[in-house]
Image 1 (spheres, rainbow, N blue to C red):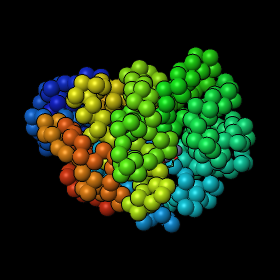
Image 2 (image 1 turned 180 degrees about the vertical axis):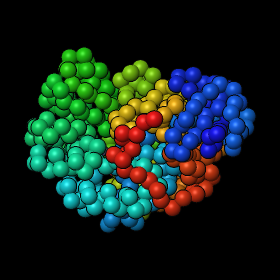
Image 3 (image 1 turned 180 degrees about the horizontal axis):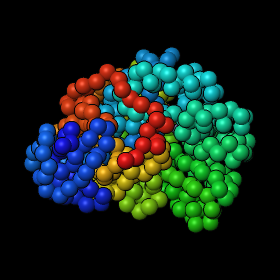
Image 4 (image 1 turned 120 degrees about the horizontal axis):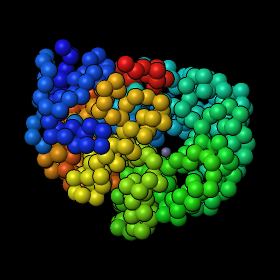
Length: 409
Ligand code: NCD
Ligand code: ZN
Ligand code: ZN
């Protein structure tokens, strides 16, 4: 007898099935069957509810340390689970930054004590192969380069090649030119490299990647953020200009459409929120701080795109759940026997108005304020444990993904 059976409509592989029994034993999915089968405790989904894998967001800024007034590990990962995200990968531009094995170690200790979601951490640009090897041993999931690091891209590519550390690049030159940055990066990538481009925002950038993939025997992957897929700069008034200020900036409507279509095409590999909270007065100052919270809105926003017919559901789950989990080497992101029971129940029948005042993030604003959404998170399971059901049910328990890597049954 399983610990729990969840019975109802669910996405199994690429198929949406009306009645499925997902059995959960301990932290794993122990069986997936058609119909209402088995015995033992049962969670019966109501009409309009839908069971999906919870998401893995590989680009978040949880702040904390000297920027705990913007967000901390607890509030940021609480926001994650409230948004149906049970695994996050952090970016290293904290204060102080995560730019050494010792800073990484300290960060992992903080996360172990405070995180609600499971987690991974990117390190910042490291000059030495020795440090990169050490960071990998600690479990770093990649090395993140910022615009200021791009002048020394060759050095970091060398560190990456010699240590085996993957790169993630914020592709903008100092002046803010994404296309030039992407062109430069692609011209330096060699066979065998593994480079992920963060938050790509322009059609031309994505076209260059599409071409380069055909020519280079390298792994080049692309993240797209919901704001670059759903918003463009054209429709912004003065106040929303400040709230929606972000790096790279919102682009044109044609760019937006092209990036969005890269999901159902195959040029965009990952959906990632770039959750980048700031205090409200920092957003309202001149110039406004770039970035805004995204963890609580990404899954409901993108699922609404499916419900309204603009996106395939298996594409969404592939790019926000399965592919990022694979990138981190964990068996999550699919409702399948032997995978972790990281699951989310959505209500897909109630239309609701998005309001940032309800966020668990400290940053209570969003460029999507007031949007009508047709998908709402009802409950969230992290490795078989109910961690959210309209409110947060746990105080911690997030685990470093490295501890989850080997487990299969
Ligand atoms: C991010 C931040 O605030 O840390 N801001 C942003 O506009 N995207 C930095 C980043 O992801 O480059
Ligand atoms: Zn960035
Ligand atoms: Zn970022």
